[in-house]
Image 1 (cartoon, rainbow, N blue to C red):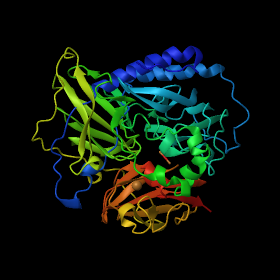
Image 2 (image 1 turned 90 degrees about the horizontal axis):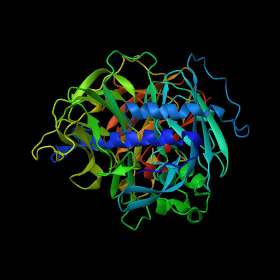
Image 3 (image 1 turned 135 degrees about the vertical axis):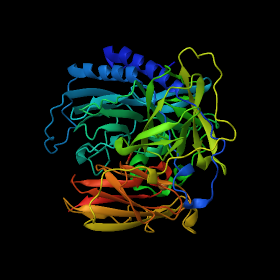
Image 4 (image 1 turned 180 degrees about the vertical axis):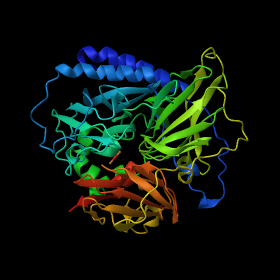
Length: 545
Ligand code: C2O
Ligand code: CU
């Protein structure tokens, strides 16, 4: 199956083993088909079909994970290149240990399914990259070697890193030049399901495979640990045009520097073609399209956790497992005040959910995702199968045709109580696409302007900042804040003690208020994680003064 490339030296086999396990894991998970997502009535319903994300990476199961972690440890011998390490503030105190990893960024021909090979970007020769697993408070040191003929960076999505480690060209420092090396170092916090991805020429690099799971285990393990877990990280690909995939243009086609202009500045003249929505036709979890992913094995009676990560390029995905209810325990890796039982969980791009189910319905079941944007009715995509031990030979079962599924909504999720009043409020109206008459459908805006002309969010250390977000466009906007965790504090004007998150998906005409404390000085991005929208200008900066 996979053939990880070996910049890892002796550790290559470990990583391979861990990927095998991962792939195994992934396969298992799949089930369901939500035929009837009931296009319910109108837009008053908060999240239903909207969030789409992708589950991709469930794969790693405990075993895979520990192998990956083990694989990481051995880089002790790795000497840290002196060159690219910028001076940065001293790291916070930690009682954790130093965990070292190495990621080599390159290109590979990646087999999504038999006969479907794409020209992809890869970390350590694999798509997605290896799952990195650490413990809260550990110092994480990741040496990234860029073997591309273009620059790249790594962003640690959902981790409160110092700004110099955030992987954003310009605001974090220069990107890693072709042939160059950079060592990212940060303390692993907060605990939970995080992920990493390229933050340079995003649609091509991140969309083309430069993604991976980062799991930060809580230092104090709850006694309620599940019996087994898998990480599923999604991806979406264009294969129809004979593998001119989504992205993956040759370096010469982008002039090598498209990343700076395209990735960060959006909207530049040359970007219009890249801004058109790619026609994705193949959807993966952990790099494999159904039914190529090995099924996720479970034993009857077990409580199983799935870490769902929508690492796709543009699409909200609604995840569901035939034959089982899902208990949502974490949103974007952060624990909910109360777990919530649902049939399906929507995730916009960049969002994560930890869900648990009890394996009490033996057989082989599909894990599926409804993708609302693919057609009027939305389209069901099979991701992988969950297979009970002893049922390997069963046919995969789906939801009944008339199933009515309860889909999670943000209003179901609760977090800690929040203080009454923010110090400062910004109102941000998100628009673009078809709403932008005369501006071309690939311009996306905040308060009528595209990045870098969008209004910045100016903050002072210690302030509590409220962002009132309203989506007046027709498409979903999964809005992600770098370097901070925020809390959902109002849903369509109604005050709530909502979940702690780093990415929140607004459907058409939805309004959410979020608040964060300005406690991590620097200049940070706040942007839509739909990579087409992001590159089309739906982005601004949080600036400390
Ligand atoms: Cu997940 Cu600005 O990124
Ligand atoms: Cu968007």
